[in-house]
Length: 105
Image 1: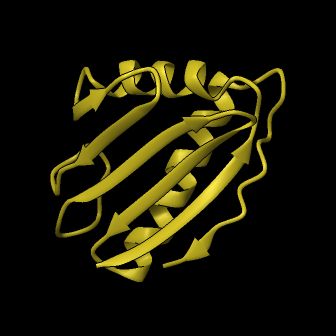
Image 2 (image 1 turned 180 degrees about the horizontal axis):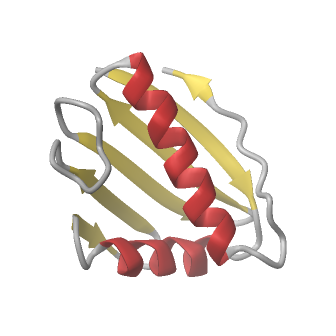
Image 3 (image 1 turned 90 degrees about the horizontal axis):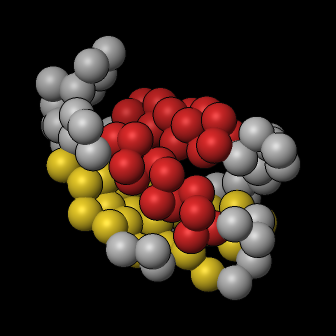
């Protein structure tokens, strides 16, 4: 597994976490509270070009939304970074683009 984590500075972390999880729960396996959420992207997700699942974890804190992505390959990890950033920026349009300081784990 390849992993990366980032902090996206925002005062609306819980709001964005919930909006994003509600958005994805229609098609993906999602579990969330106002403070924590996980989204599993299956190998057959729409438009997916990878062979195994990916897990995205969100944690809402004061002043930032923490995001962690666990993926099967470097290519998958990079693709998921883009998916997460684009979707979050849609919900955070008033302060987009959010700054992600991705760090490999």
